[in-house]
Amino acid sequence: MRKGIFITIEGGEGAGKSTLIEQLSNKMLNSGMKITTTREPGGIPIAEQIRHVILDREHTAMDGRTEALLYAAARRQHLVEKVAPALQEGQIVICDRFVDSSLAYQGHARGLGMDEVWAINKFAILDLMPDMTIYMDVSPEVGLRRIAEASEREVNRLDLEKRSFHEKVREGYLRLVEQNPDRIVLINAEQRPELVFNDVLKAIDSRFAGIFATDVKLKRMDIFE
Ligand code: TMP
Image 1 (cartoon, helix red, strand yellow):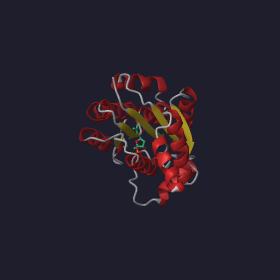
Image 2 (spheres, rainbow, N blue to C red; image 1 turned 90 degrees about the horizontal axis):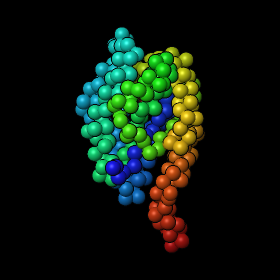
Image 3 (cartoon, rainbow, N blue to C red; image 1 turned 60 degrees about the horizontal axis):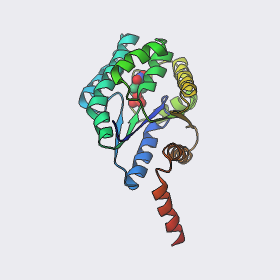
Image 4 (cartoon, rainbow, N blue to C red; image 1 turned 120 degrees about the vertical axis):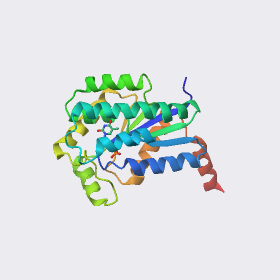
């Protein structure tokens, strides 16, 4: 039995996941919560090495199924080594991408089929699904423009795909939102970062019945003092 809370953050390129995760982890740490933030593919040495193999811009010969299998392999190791132990300790785990990325990118955008990609991922994760997934929705036009303007960000093999690929990624995500209304919350990530963050806090608070309530009470006291 796991005791913690598993939250995943999803979205296309330039959706602002990293900014959100930084804001969210600061907020949770300030509220006295025990958290682990991590990312996929990666988060631990074995999975970071797999990340390097998958995303290397030289690896243009990589077959779509190989790509899907490597993501699933990295996911399995990361889950066993890092995510599951942290959940077992009762921590809140915030993970930048998880299985929905494989379903949207490899399943839908690469055309391997969401069901097929789900099958190999089911083998990898067994039944360890997120308690909540935040999907940061942004059009490829806005997302890719943001990436082009952020010179410090790494440009990986998947970033170099055509615009139509990124359109399909979004289409895949929107399908997943529709199919999983209890787990996935869509956030309009084209808004200003403060508004995005506010929407995310509201969504988490309502999903986990006032998880930030203590913090909110403290703020109210500050106002009246
Ligand atoms: P990042 O840029 O958000 O770190 O993600 C790395 C890239 O890997 C990004 O282009 C999305 C892609 N990806 C997949 O295609 N499938 C997956 O399962 C995961 C986790 C990431």
